[in-house]
Image (tube, rainbow, N blue to C red):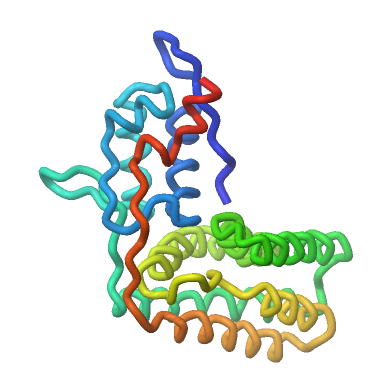
Length: 240
């Protein structure tokens, strides 16, 4: 997951990496449903939220569009995509290929430190779910899957999953029944247990089952709650 962005102080020139920080913040906001499908991302509002120039915002939006996180449309600018169910089939097909291979490679090979790191994510996800902190539970769910990809040691797996997770989250916002978490923490706990004690083939079967469960939960259209763009990133203005 991209690092959390911080606001740049007002200055004639924005600090190095400002566009990357805008990128990371928008990516995270899509992933945890703070930016719902169909929402317009106006350059001027984003520039004000991050205290950077519109040029830097434009750079970040172009990179986000290249990575499939947002869509740039003629005469409409940047918008959060609205994936179809057919798009969902393609996304989960790709995730099954990548993530089943990831866990097949990791099974029986995780270090004690790696197991503890994954366990901490699962525990935090469970706490967030129980406290009804939806955004944090969603973020941690994606972090669990992404950390597995990192631990595989294959940067291409990481890049592919970074591209697939935002669309997965948008699909959840559109089609998952309200009140249900993106993933279920106990499913991650079960998968983690299998990674430590089961052959790779069994871990891959469990990952496939887990991803199938998520895909099959996309059964009904939802009405994502829209939040004004100025409020999505209001924390940046507070720290500016």
